[in-house]
Structure formats: C-alpha cells, structure tokens
Length: 462
Image (cartoon, rainbow, N blue to C red; front, side, top):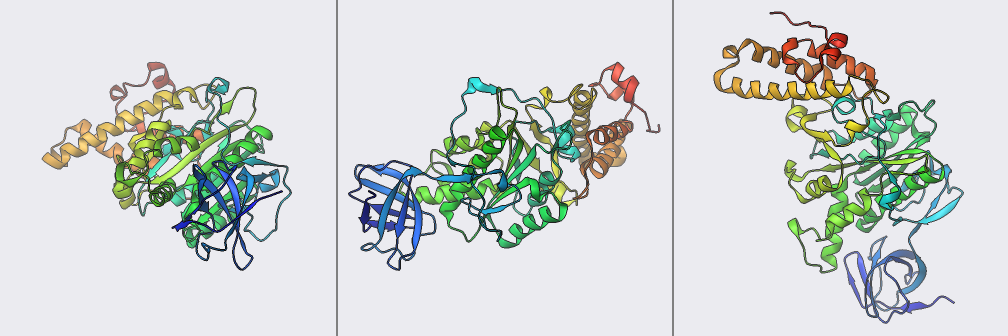
C-alpha cells in the first residue's frame, strides 16, 4: 500500500523539502496532490537522513506547506518508448504535444540510462555526411562521435542545427531507412520552436525525427530532464531497433544555467562563474552516452550546440565540453558579419576522430591530404591578411597575393552555402581541388605527388 506524506517543511524556488520520509531513494519520482486535487510530479534530488529535497516539474506555485500530499512512486523517472515516437513532437519530459494523442509504449526505461562498459565500446570510424562542405571536409562527423558546435548569441546555430538534421545521412546505407534524428531543444522561444517544427515538416524529414521541446516558459527543472529523455529515446532506437541515430542537443548553455539555478536553490557552494562543482561530471553523464557497442548494429552520435557567453571559448561550459568531447566546430562572428553562412571558423575547428573515418573505403582516397592542405593554405591566408594590414595589400609578394585571392574564393565558394544546399562529399572534395588550383603546385606541400598528378589542375595566372 502506497504511503502519502502530508505537508512540506519548506519551499525554495522550484524545490520543495519534506521531512520524516522513510524508504525513499535519490532520483525516485513522487506524485504531489494539491488542495484542489490537481497533481504534479517531482523527483527526489537529495537525501539527508529523513529529509528529502524534491524537484517539482510544474513549479511550486500553489503548493501548500500544510496540505500538500506527497506519494513516493518507488522508481526513477521513466519514459515510454516505441518506434511510433518517430515523427512525433514531445515536451521536455516525453509527453506528446503535437495533438495526435498518446502512442503505444513498447517498453519504458529509466531516463538516467546505464553507463556503457568501455570494454564493450567499438571505435567510431564511419562517415556521416551533413551536406555542409566546411564540416564534411575539414571537421568530419564520424558515426558514434560527440562533436559539439560552439556558437554565440545571435549566430545562426538554429539554422545550422536544422540543416544538419535535414541533410545528415550515413553513406552507403541504401535508402537510409535505418537513420533517425533525435532533436532536443532546451529553453527555446516559441518562434524558434515553431521554426524547428515547420522546417522538418516542409522538408519531409519529420517522419524520421523525434523532437523534444522544452520552451523558455516551461519549468526550469524540466530542462534538466530533456536531454536525458532524448538520449534514452536515441539509445532505444539504436540498440533495440539497430538504427543509426544522430542526437542534436540545443542549447547546452540553457541546460547548464538551469543546473546552476537549481544548485543555487539547494544552497550548494558554487564553483567557476557560479556553476556547481559537478558541472563536468554532469555534462559527461550526457556526452558519454554517445558511441557504438560491439555486436550492436546501431549507433548514437551527438552534436551538442552551445552558445558561448560573450563569445568566450574559455567559459566553463565550452571549456568543460571541449575536455569531454572529440573536437569542436566553432562558428566565427567575423564570418557571420561578413554574410557567410554557415560561418564555420576553420582554424579553431577540428574533429579528433576524422582521421580514422575518411579516405579510401570511407569517403575518397584524396580526402585526408586535401583537408590538410586546405587547412594549411587557409592558415597562410590569415598570415597574409595580418601582413597586409601592416604594409598594405599592394606591397605583398606575388605568392601572398595569390593566398589572399585564394582566401576570398575559399570563403565565397567553399564556406558559403545556401540553407537548403546539400553537397555530396565528392562535390565538396572536387570544389576543394578547384580552389587549390589557384595556388602554384610548389605550395601544395601536404599532398603527395601521386595525388597531385591525379587531381591537381592549375587555374592561376602568373
């Protein structure tokens, strides 16, 4: 028989404290009944003796210290899972909000997931094509990888997230029927949420997308659960139904700020910038749920998106994210102001796993050397620009002028794409060779003579 506890000892922000509780456990779900008979759900986040601190998902307004009744559910938060989730829009804790009613649950799982034994992991080495040249060629996304996008306030990361979700595909997967997107938005405004839904509907990919939406006016506590629900759904589709799942999480800064707010309400001692000292381990508990498991056909790939406060890449959120993940794609404000979309800043961007997922048998034999050469050439463009700002462009040497011309064309033709432009990897690599043709062959010192003989076609003029 379930036991109900009457009354609360304290209410602080989104948290409620109850005393005299027995047999409770951390992460256990509770049901709270208000004076008017309405119910709210909560989660025990801290235990101290017979005292429990409860996160109330729908907020604590209207709760009574004397009359609120709390019942322990005896289990952690769980989410209903089914392949019928594909094509559906859910709220931050997994309840349908698209007006099509509930879906049949094949099973339910704890949203906190289970840690993957490192010994059972398989090394990621398969290419995912996003259709975006700057990513596919220079910071390649590998299946099973976690590759974050570092953006800033006012940058087009929402457009980029939608474009990746629309265009991403596993090369060599036939009709791509085994590929799915789990899209989780945290703390977004209504117009942004509507943009996400409308874009997926109009592009015809909604039937392979599971969308979790936590709006800016939704309870901040719900924001903590949203990525966990999304990753649980991704693990179910990947390891139960053998699908390749790409998880896009936006915006992880909203998640971290919600974590900071709740930590402050609990009275915990803050660390850097007021964030809790366990921010690293908390982010790791999310990011490390990506990967490929031995003897499993499916995979979970993550693209977390975060906005860097004041464009500061040393801020705790991008700083800690960089330690946990395998590279980063950095969006540059200068490129964005110049009208370049997507404004991927090439030099600080990297994918640490791309070396094992590109080349012959994966993308094309020339991909590794071409990407190295494009990176090196663009680095020299930046050096030439710095020199030109001191002595003037007219005083540059002939080769520096060629690099300046290469840089302009590289940004105009390679980095710049339309929001609906989907380039194949062969189109991207061919374009890279076309741009390298603007430079003398003697400058291409990162490419073997064999590859130069096969692909290099000079187009520059002395």
